[in-house]
Amino acid sequence: MRSCALLVFITLGISQIAWSQTYYPAEELLRLEKAISYHFDPLTLIGEIHYQKKYIRLLPYENFYTVNSVVVPIEKPAIIQEGSLYFSAELFEEILGELSLPIRYRFRGKKIQLEKAEPLPQLRGEIPTVIVLDAGHGGHDPGAFGYQGVREKDITLKVTKFLGFHLKSAFPKTKIVLTRRKDTFLPLEKRSSIANKFYSDRYRTIFISIHCNATLSPLIHGFEIYHLAINPTNMANRETELRENLLVGEEKIRELTSRLVHAQIQYESKLLSRSLEKIMQKELQGLVSSRGVRKADFAVLRYALMPAVLIELGYISNPREAQLLLSERYLNALAKALEMGIRLYSENLP
Ligand SMILES: [Zn+2]
Image 1: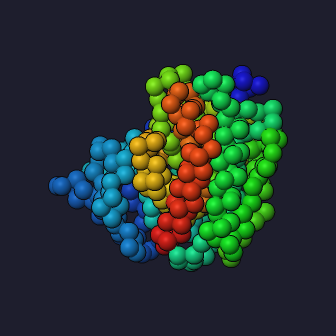
Image 2 (image 1 turned 180 degrees about the vertical axis):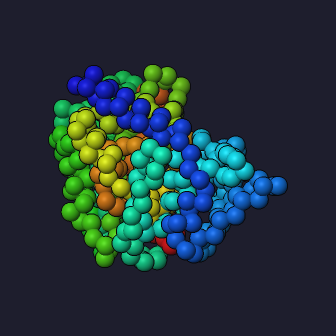
Image 3 (image 1 turned 30 degrees about the vertical axis):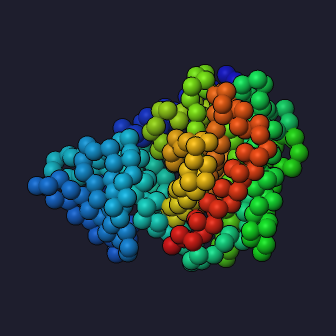
């Protein structure tokens, strides 16, 4: 099973490397939507993109861009070719998400496939109608093993139940769905298909998959919040990606990579990640630190048709964090912070 999964990963990895070496002319943005304005100043080397209330600025060869003055790090910056600005696939995908356009996209070698999509409903400030909570792993899939035999599948189930409880009392009108309530095995696609049953373009559904991380070094600690990117370039996230995609077959991966991704859903997933991170940092200060909002190509997120995030609550390979994650009081505090993060996301919806 392990070698088969590794093969899948390598296949995915190779295609991503090919994409990551491809650059796309910045002018491609102009064919997305008439209202987008783009300007590149060859003297100052500043590229500027305006669309509605969004203002993006970037410099070639710099590992960040700003959106309305907020700095966002990137691994593959823009470059200059024959006096024009070219975006890496990673940066192009970031910008598509930031502009939150009603389009679907896919990177195919040197081309970006773009299709018009139904816009998401404008539900400014509204709490989601359905929240699907997914406790990672279960049954014969224990997930990661940690310090003193701590099992990922047990922690994820407990936190998910606590979170369900908090959400029910905070948002009584919201339907809370748990993909599993017991120690049972569920394939990744089944988890998202439970969520997809509730998907509708009339109301808002979000999907939150809960996990714990582990690695060889007992020193690494902290929580991470992931949203989907089809061009993740951060090699540091690959180990987590490999582990969380372990039980997905090659055929399923191929089917997933052929799908187009909705830019507005990407934007909202990013917004949800940022909101959750902000509140977790504030509420759990001194207990757990943030390793940041990150991008990864997780199968469980690719399958979901709605804003979706995957949270790695902490490292069970770190003795201190494993101890914390064994405490029900701490798990309850984590769940409460996540509930508050969902509220912040709702308040910030465009
Ligand atoms: Zn996991």
